Image (cartoon, rainbow, N blue to C red; front, side, top):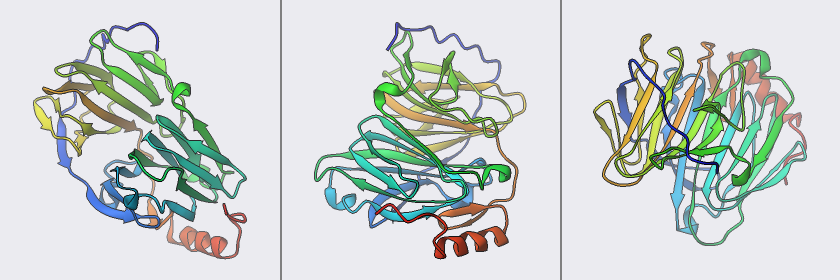
Amino acid sequence: MTSPIKNDVTLTQPRQVEQLYAGVDTQDGAGVKLTRVLTHQLQHRLDPYLMLDNFKSDDPDDYIAGFPNHPHRGFETVTYMITGRMRHKDSAGNEGLLDNGGVQWMTAAKGVIHSELPEQEDGEMEGFQLWLNLPAKDKMNDPWYKDFQDADLPKFVTENGTQVTVIAGESNGVEGAVTREMTEPTYLDIHLPAGASFSHKIPANHNAFVFVYRGSASIEGKQVPVKNMAILKNDPNADGIILEAGSEDTKVILVTGRPLNEPIVQYGPFVMNSQQEIIQAVTDFQEGRFGEGAQ
């Protein structure tokens, strides 16, 4: 990490909190326990994002079965492993080990079958999986995949000790690991010391949300408790966000993106623009057009 930088972002009208969501406890894969923070009902409100899951447990029974072979089409998955080890294999021939602090960015596009299986038998596993929609014109492109280990991810620290990992987009002049032209995603992991603040510019036409996973934060006077997502109010005059940590060290993810404003039709692991495209996706999967599987 380089020398501290001055977080001198000047905002004329910071965004306010529109609503808080605590998420829904559920299971996915072969019984992995998780909290679904961004649910199906919020897809249009938080376009281009489709889903956000948060998993955290030190009980192997909650995660050991992992996510065996399953298909995807029409979107991207971003897996951020804060603590733990997960092995990825897919039908495009990719394989990688996601370790502490690493990110896996997978563009399913026209279709891929993959598995995500823990490579640990005990200890804590914690992280996020975010689904980012693809524009209609890109949904049937070839799949793409890349692993970023912790050391590969751009980071910076501010003068007040706030540490920021730039997974996607840009913050304070630091370019992230991934950029996307159509959705312009920004994905930041922000660690604030107790009482510290952090400012970040957000385009007025982008949807944005914050999820607090340690401590508590304040956004324009609104308290955001741990394990809560704050949807930021859309305002044509707003130009960013000011985050303030409470009385303890606080960790949040900040996610923003430009909405696609296209129809969203989801059937399980397939997200397309029409019912006919969904039917075709199911047919293609059943007829083996997604490859031979991750095994």
